[in-house]
Length: 296
Image (cartoon, rainbow, N blue to C red; front, side, top):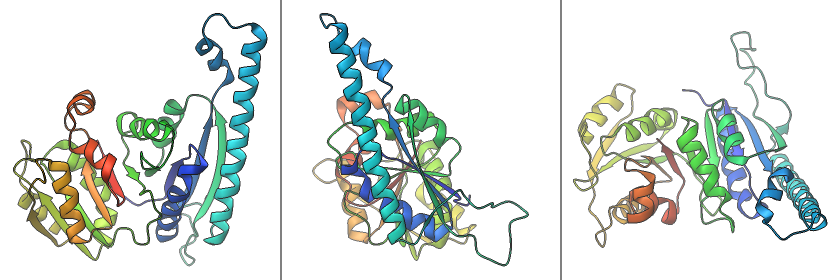
């Protein structure tokens, strides 16, 4: 699958820089269109949250403050986004046409646009994600609020599209050495399918597997044979848990390999179980220092 449209759900300036930098790298490499989407809170949703005991004037004041905060955040994000696009020589414009009648002699240039809309973030992000090829979200620890995690879960559970979790710091390389976490599940298979454009272009690919990580499904060597049909030469390496944590072992193996991208399925166990008991997905989300491409 070619990457022609990349969605960036931006929640705050504090978490946006690495997301935009990652998106610009991908947009330039694939001549893709970058859509930065900021969702402002609908002030009509504030009143029911205010609770009882507040006067009409107090509620109105809260709604006004919410609207002003949203506009201020949107303006700050727009300035940051357009400045970073200018520095990367990516034009703010509508996307070029990639269809069968697009000019074949000239390479289509990357493009970008910023939109700020009002509504419920999870619904709007998931909806826009369904008509995007890739969604880049902030690392859960890169922002002070939980909105970045909400956007990630909206993509993973409600869009059917892959989510790329940007690292806290801006990445210098992306997708040259790829580690694939394989446990035989449908989720990991979906992640591999979404990452095929990356795997084909990568300089090196390593499949990481573990007896403790594997679920019922094809073994890692079967995946290597499948990737070979796509001209991807992948080595298969087994990893071990670190301090009884499969997630820690996986990240240690990816780091030892020098990976600049980790590809994995998300939540092969239920999200509730991982929230209560922990799990590989949760551990990686909380501790990964490299970009992670997830699918479910």
